[in-house]
Image 1: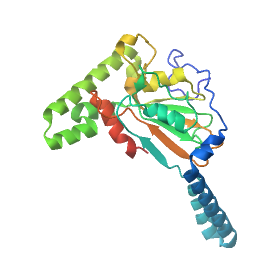
Image 2 (image 1 turned 30 degrees about the vertical axis):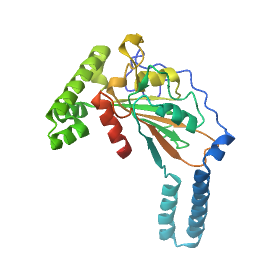
Image 3 (image 1 turned 180 degrees about the vertical axis):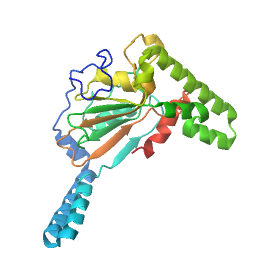
Length: 267
């Protein structure tokens, strides 16, 4: 089943078989006592707001009800940043009790900021995975000034670094065009949505491996993917939480380092 896919070509969208994620893991509660305390405090606050709604006048009740809804939707985020290939993805899988969720082989590594929304309802019905692609304006900005790293390089007078980044962005775009052909332009600025997620799917959008590995399908859309959002349910996780996996720092490919630097400010 394809859910809200931007393009109709069946060779672009393949319905994955689905990934088994443990829905209950008592160890999660034991591992995050601080989150349990936060959940308890939030519940007490929500109870107090509900009591206030019943006692207040109509106008005030509406305002408090809106506040109550906002409190329920609060999603704190944790962004994991570190050296490339240092095991960040394996750590995240272990933290949430889903060891096989994100690909962790030695060869492929994360190339896209991947947000795991734990117990947060997806904003779109039946959508469990969403992958957004760069648009033309974002590509042009990267090519012209190198994005955030380019701005820092210009301020520091690091012209050589700026030119290196610009050339990497140009090469990346050319590689994506060669891989996707005429579909490249049609994909820019769009997104793909899925009702389920598995390892093979993620490798197509968020992982890049060594060129000599010979896996043509792996990383098929990675070069143009701006972000990935996955929505998973863990019954024993006490609060809503977003955990972000990043490409990492100290990468010779500066664009991936730029993506990592921008990750903490992502909304």
